[in-house]
Image 1 (tube, one colour):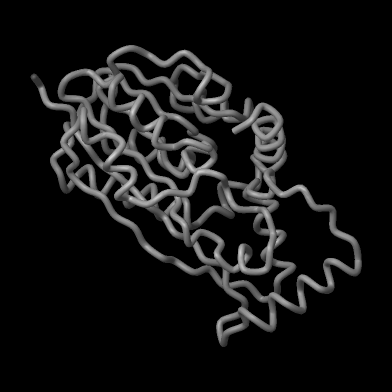
Image 2 (image 1 turned 180 degrees about the horizontal axis):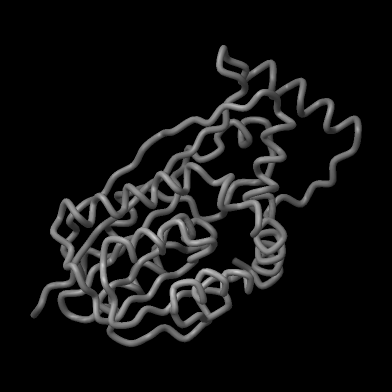
Length: 253
């Protein structure tokens, strides 16, 4: 992200912080998927030092604490309001852009859910994370792939995140350092009564931080008409989510 984009995204997520948790059901699903994959591959019951990027309102953070013990854990988020999540769990909090804050050395869990798509170069962040892990450490990360919000891209809006990538790209970024235990992806549509409900959903989850257009009465009417004509179904109008994830482990030697 450029500094200007980073500032816009931070303001958008800060505005939506109180509404995000109950609205972001797809993000909650992928957080549960990550914990399930950790369990399936035998993640340890205790991590001595954990580090989570983009903790937000704590969908993934709380699940990690429910399923694992921590000697210590540091949480990061671009929105200062996320300190609430850290305070609730007795964790240290570092506010700021994930690329610019100081990372702890040799963490044995590096975790992040539904955040790296906001990085213009998510592979660089993944590679850095893999290199920073302690021997035996775990990397557990999700983002979103190229079909995220494909309906919006079809009609030319700019709400999509800049760093959408697939599981193969995620694996390639860390394979020099880590044993890849699991990668995956899913295409999960959400349905809404009208296109205007989609816009409200995006605002409540902070995803409109990248959009630069200003709605007028006429542009909103055109958007609603085109979206309805192209993406209406018996369940409502669709908005597609494309979660992708990776679980990997650093060899002991």
